[in-house]
Length: 305
Image 1 (spheres, rainbow, N blue to C red):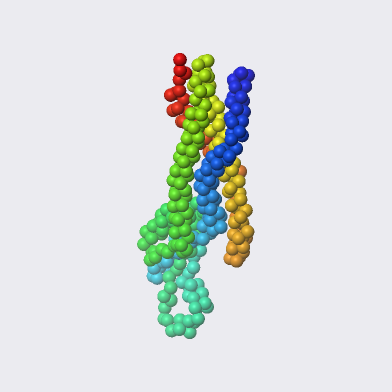
Image 2 (cartoon, rainbow, N blue to C red):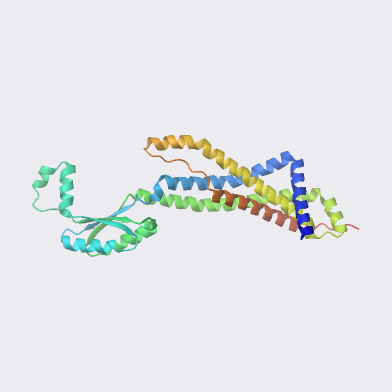
């Protein structure tokens, strides 16, 4: 185990030394990798901040259930109790026809005209507030169909439908982000794989001599794998720095814009978990890209007699 560990340390230090001896080329490669990793990270952070700025829509969506005008108040109260017992509903408020007429008379300015009406034309109304886990479009649609199926109900209306549209846009952005991240991940693999290929070609004579004295493909491949991991990890660290600078650059104008709308929202940066995921992703892509390239090209190099 001691010899095995010493060989790995030797391969790691050797890879670090080779990268340090070519600082300009290393910096260019790390920059390309960092940009590819930073783009999906920034877009993901933008989606996260958009959800935080809107409170994740939990308090923005309500549903209004209008009963038919001939439904008595006692029946409306019974249905309101049934609605409160349903999963996915945080609260139900019953507004009777008399309350609705009184509020309309007070706020509409047509109080005198309403006195000429013989009967109250307004129905009883339920104001339904869904729970946060039932505020997505699919759950709201199911809840709407549930109330619309009641024979006593005349109309079901979802308030603030723009919120649902915005939520759908964010969901589309998240899926587009997944596709973008996958494409840029393939780009990182290609960059690291091509870099390792060039290094293998530059060290062809060294590899032939190593194999001539008994070095296995695994032994020869080890320093290239460490090089790939260092490229991926270094690119991820640089991507983290780029994301941090973007957050610092935008934090002040975003705060001023939020203040104009009476909000205390502050731009959120990446969490420790997200940073850890970025570093692990970079290292994993570096290892995979180096392994694919080394496995392909080292098998073609054999010592010449």
